[in-house]
Length: 179
Image (tube, rainbow, N blue to C red; front, top):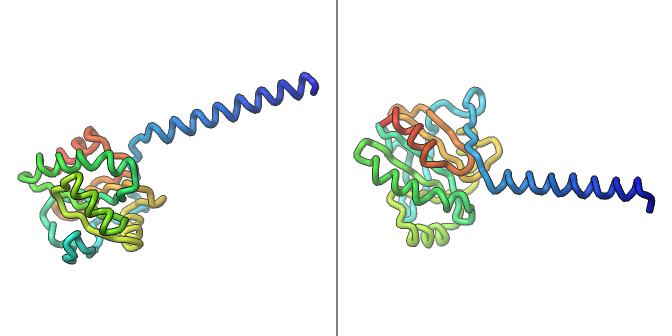
């Protein structure tokens, strides 16, 4: 093996290692990714109806005149699991001001019920499948990622959408002018 081939091999390994490191950092440090709505999502809350954990059909019209936070999630999604305690806390903290969280789980009812039993979710959890993915896509979730959160004002106008892990700072910042 010539010294040029050896040097090329070392450089190639270095480039691959750097690429792997940067990819790992991007995965480990999910940043906020506000999706701009212009042309990419609906401006108002679309009609939807999914069943809750008790088997009752729930519709978006139930939460008319509320500041509505709709969160698409799954039990197998680590960032979804990470943000759920914050959503529970925010629901409790701001419910009297007209805030309503609604979780739309893209998962099996048994797994969602087990998750709910552990976390004690204090807001409606709806069970959905492909229809929920379509709904999140209509709201601007072009890449169908989880978690995905959409915030609507009391008139049902889309105020903010967020793909990926939601932070408390971002959520409070978005909710403050609406409550």
